[in-house]
Amino acid sequence: MKPGDILKPMNILFVSDVYLPTVSGVASSTDSIVRFMAAQGHRVTLVCPQPLGEYVPLQAAGLEIVYTPGVSDKLFVNKSMTLFPLGFPVLWHVVLNNTFDIVHIQEPGSLGITALIIAKLFRLPVVGAQHFSWSQIERVAPPLIRWISVPFMKLYVRVIYAMYDEIMVPTATAARDLSALIGRSGSIHPVSNGVDTGMYTPRTGSATVLRAKYRLSKDIPVLLYIGRLDADKNIETILQALAITATPIRMMIAGVGKQKERLQSLATSLKLTNIIWMDEVQKQVIIDLYQLADAFVIMSPVETQSIVALQALACGLPLIAARAGALPELVDGKNGVLVDAYDVNTLASTIDRLASDSTLRKSMGAQSRKISLRHHKPTVLKRLEVLYKQTMHPSS
Image 1 (spheres, rainbow, N blue to C red):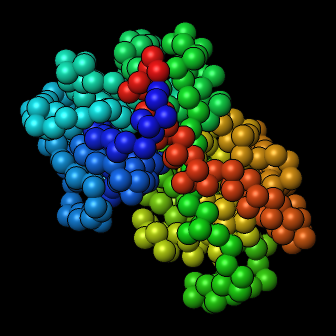
Image 2 (cartoon, rainbow, N blue to C red; image 1 turned 60 degrees about the vertical axis):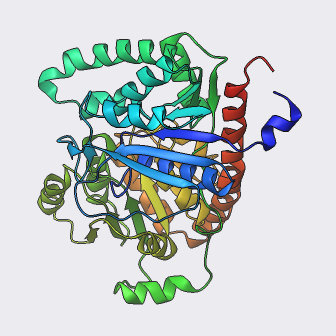
């Protein structure tokens, strides 16, 4: 790559099988990347499924959003998808009428595979991203087809990822796992999802006001979870641990998902009366929840990073996380505690320990903030920008 190449604006085709208003890490990652690249002066065309309901995305100079036909994805709540090959005419038209420098494919879904085929036909360089793990597929796939779906998906990914010129993953853990599967390493690049550490930051004095707003006692610690309420998130373990904690605590759970009613029934059967359930919430409300909380808990065994965990760290919260997936990369022993994903008793004792020790929470929270600064979004997305340039000029 020549020195001047890094300064030249790019024409980027960005393809994602999921986008806002769907609540998911991939949708959030997509929005962050396309808006960052547009703000850097690049021209970005985002192709994604048509939302199920009315949704008007925020406009941004240099960003064009093109929708493909969308239908309801039965595996998730409020998520649309484009069936293969219904996205083909739209993507073909977009590529035919533009001169793209690079194609970024967020997931190897139906829309992603369509984009890959067209990119190869037009000889466009491709950066493919990976945001999932095999354990996640096993937990989400219907039991009756799981025995065939997981081996098929592994074969599918081996074939698809072999066709990407370069691959972006969010963590070193994800890089190792994918490298072991597909037999490639040099072309796999860890680039954190990143977090806006200016937007997500501790706000002195705001907790008292916000607790009053939500009618929460200032003397009872608040444990927070934000995210999808689906099988792969392992919310059951959190509820079971809460049922045997000895310290007074309030739990706030914000999110929607296929498992929500079942989880609420489980909470009732466990006689848990200290949980506040919230549906999908706006960004400002999410920021408020981080400010009023005392600790964040995430027990999913399948995270390839976790954007909500990054946000919690940036807001100065101690992290109680599963010792699984890539979550250990975010916990250094000084900013939180790792617990085996299904160890209810240890999770309960960990919650009790943090709930009863405000000094410990404060010191852990300060370290969380320091760790989050390594993932400052403009810094990490600059690395992706460089990766795009390197993919365009592989022999330079």
